Structure formats: structure tokens, C-alpha cells
Image (spheres, rainbow, N blue to C red):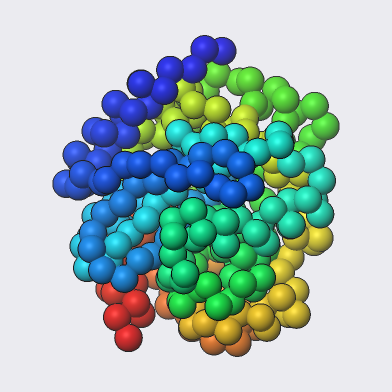
Length: 310
């Protein structure tokens, strides 16, 4: 299927206009290979935002537009949005994925010429951020996780993730032309159902997400590089769970702004997982699902500013 990055760029520009912001846009080269697309808003202490699976840095638009007192650095992870694919080709083994996650954060900070920074993440980005922070704790001043992350215990994985784990389905999913309705259903499955119903995730956002899925290789690249993270029957593979040994290496303050009703793992999972993080603190966002900054923007902005400003 032909891809047209210009269509995605136009949809993304409308999203930024919709939230009243105009980010600085540039690219940096990773020492490990490939260029990463970066967008920035605000001035002040740097905060690096790492997005979730099969999405892009603009997924943070609503939140970062409300944080002008911080230098919000939103990257399109390699293979996502307008960044180059992962250097060396798709990741095919789980151990290879873990090693990649361990080094990605430091690679990004090096490319951005930052000795250290606060880091904010969600979902699959949380897996990358937590493993990267544990591997190089001196590079991360503070860590924020918005709702459930891959690597934390969870309930039933969404159908779209289980289907992607079926042999042969990865290739089919990567090639599937996503319609606007299909994107809407997929987003609802992973935890944006409430936001779509209430209009918090509105038509402009849906147009942006559809353009991302239809006119970039984001979906295919991320599906091909998440080997055995999810299993068809069991859901999340126990082999990706973050161990107490790994979590003990997180020496920085860690804030969890967790959606009470995240279908991937809600308040009960949060209350079990967060005490395992040495300097972790938990803010439950009432009624919110997997993207709490969309379900309750004010609560997430307040929690973020208070934590980062200490």
C-alpha cells in the first residue's frame, strides 16, 4: 500500500492547531543508527516524552500544550511517525527487544545532547523508559508513567494485541489498510473507549490517528518489532514483566498517574505494582482509562506540574 507522509503531516498540523500549539520540529541521529524525528514545546527543564505502541510523539499534544514551563521533547520512536525504522531491521527476539529497550533512552539523550532529563512515558513507551532508566539511572532525574505499562502485571490483553501474536498475523496486520472505523475500534480496545465516547478524543484526533495508521509505516514497524510481548491465549508474556531486581535500580523519584479504569490493568494493578518501585508514588485518576491525560487533562497537568516542580 502506498504511503503519503504529506497527508500525515497535514493531519498532525491540524492536531497541533487544535490544541493551540506550534512545536519546533527537527531530527537527530542516533549513534546506533537512523534518524529520530523530534517535536518540542515550552522552555525550562527538559522532559523527554516516550509514546506507546503503534502511535507517535504527537499523541502527547493535549498534555504538553499545557506545560509551557517545561521543555517538552516528544520523539517519534524509531519506526514510528516520521522517524527512520529501527536500524538493522525489525527486532525478532525478545532478548533483543530487552537489550534495545535498555539502551534506547541513553541513545536518545545522547542524540539530544542532554546529560540527564526527566522522562515521561506510557504503555509500551513505559517498558522502554523503565528499562532504560534502570540501565542508566544517573541519566534520569525523575520518571513519570501515565497509567499501565507493558512490564507491569495486567489483566486481559486487548484483542488487537492477541491477534498480532498469532503466527502469520503480524505480516497481515502490517499490510492491512486501516479505515477510519477500524482505527476507532482499535483505539477503543486498547483503552481510549471512554475518551472517544465523551468526545475528549475528538474527530481531529481521530483524523490524525487514522492518517498515522494509513499513511506511515508505524503500525507495521511496531508490530514487527514486538516479538512475543503478547501471546494469543495468555495475553502479556510473563517474560516481559519487570522484575524486583530491575525496579530496585530506579533510584530517581517516580510518579504514576494511573487511570482507575485502564482495561489493561486498573487501580487494583496499580496498588500492587507501585509499592515495588523504591521511590514510587501513585495518583489514581478517577474514571480514566489508558490515556489519563485525555480522559482528565486537568488532573494530569496538576499532578505533572506538582511532581516536576519539587
